[in-house]
Structure formats: C-alpha cells, structure tokens
Length: 274
Image (tube, rainbow, N blue to C red; front, side, top):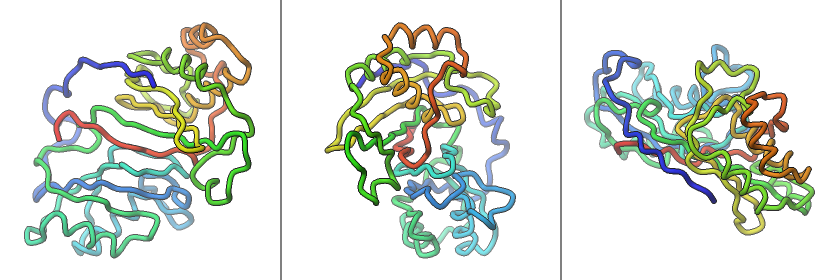
C-alpha cells in the first residue's frame, strides 16, 4: 500500500458555496448502507421505481420533525455502491433530544439496508461535503474461485488471481496531485479533472483481494475506472511505464473497463477538523 502526504491545510475562507447557516443544532451522522436496491446516494426528482439513500433518510427525518429536513452528504455514491462510513449532517429545531438519540429514532423509520451508526452535535458551520479532507473507497474482489452467492452482492468475482506486486507498482504511479482525465467518464461534468490521490494499493484480507484508494475528491465513476484500468494493464502484463504514458496522454479511450458497483464501498471520510 502506497501513500502520499498532502501539505495543504483546510480550505480557507467562509461558506460562500453554502450560503447563510440554517437555524438549529447541526447534527452529524455516520451512516452505513447496502446500495444494491438504491439508485445511489443523491435524491432524485422521481424515486417511485428505485429510491435514493438521501431521499430515504430525509423521509425518516421528516417523520421525526413533521416537516422537511434537508440532509447533506459527504459523497455521492452511484447506483449499487455501498457505504460503511458515509457522513452526513442536518440542522434540527428539536432542542430536547440528545444527539445520540437520533440513532434509534431514525433507525426505527429506516429500511434494514440503511443504518445510522452514530449521531453527534457538531459545530454550526460543519459541512459534510466541503469540510472533507479525503474520501476513502474500498473495492472487494473474489479471485481464482467461484464466489459464494452472498458474496456476489458485495464483491466482484474475478476468475484469475492477479499479481498484487505489479498492481501496487501501478498504484504508486497515481499518488500525488495529477490530471485524472484517463479515468474520467464521458458524462463527468467536473470543471477540473485534477485530484490529489493520497493512497492507492491492494492488499489481501482473508481470501478477498481489496483495492483501497483515498483522494481529496473523485470524478464520476473514477474509482471503478481506476481499478478496471489497473486490472486491464496487469492482465496484459504491461510495464508501469505503459500506464505512466497513458496517464500523460490523459485520454479516457486508453483506460480499461469501468467495473460494476457491487464491490465498491465508501469506507470513510476524513476531515480537517472533527
């Protein structure tokens, strides 16, 4: 596992992107969810066919408050992607309930696929998305054997056993601040495609191969594109220099496939100030 250090501190300035702070206490949540049956984190205009995680949580908040309560999440996971460390915050006008009591209160109204793990009051200007220093994702792979039925919900089955040493050589090339256009989905609308990657590598956990990557932010579908590309290069026994050249050309057509979402987990969010 390779890591890089980022010297930059927390974002300077105020909350121009968020506007005036709402009234009430600011409650920070730690959330886990099984993303299989959701259209992703972000609330959709119509959720009749497949709900969003955000919309499901806001419906539970509305039952407690008896009015709509907006919820801000740290990361917008895609359809089918899971989380064990999603962070979100909301402002509440209820002053009588201790913050930790929001855990059982919300879980009572949530489906089994979404659980609140922790709730605590945080500073008034805390913002789950804009205050985040880095986001860490993990992708689970079952390699070289048939996957068990329950494993297929949370991992990708790979028939072969890839060379971890070569994969980690590739991962080292991605560290630091760089143009990530090689991994940019054609539908990505980011103004800048530069991202700071602080950790990127593979390790074995039991009989599962785990890919872990941390960055200040990610492009749309970037993690799945990164992993698909590294496996694509490794399967063809391409030298790290070939990946370095593809990164330099910054052309998504040189990347490997974008892997499906079922093996991907939003693992944790790190903040400049907790």
